[in-house]
Image 1 (tube, rainbow, N blue to C red):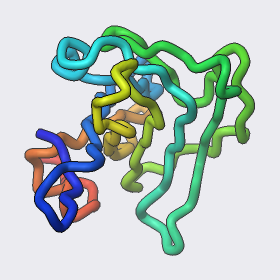
Image 2: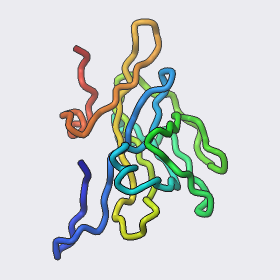
Image 3: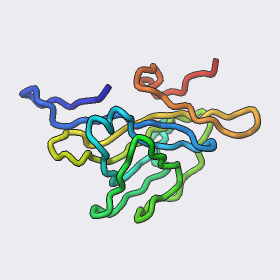
Length: 156
């Protein structure tokens, strides 16, 4: 599912697609869906922003950007780990992710096809404390009520 902006004449002029949030050794990883890669090929990433939506005002907890002439290709099987700066990127030092907080990630990237209206990819996730003192990343899918509420679901 994708989010669209519609102009008064009914034509779509921009599109936000979904980002995938996975885990690598307890650290969030960000990518695009296999469906997006099949639809549009490999997007070129120019920036990434992770924000804490549990605080007001919303707080940026990690971000980076790359020079316009050095965009990063991002595949569905890519893993951009939270806090790991890609080569050529400059960014802010990652903040500690807080259990119980609700986060969003925005991958600012476009497919190679200039006629494609996609301008970025968004994902959401929560952090939950584990019994052993670690943390668990809980991806929030777009079909979950938590996606709309922007509140972490309670453990079952």
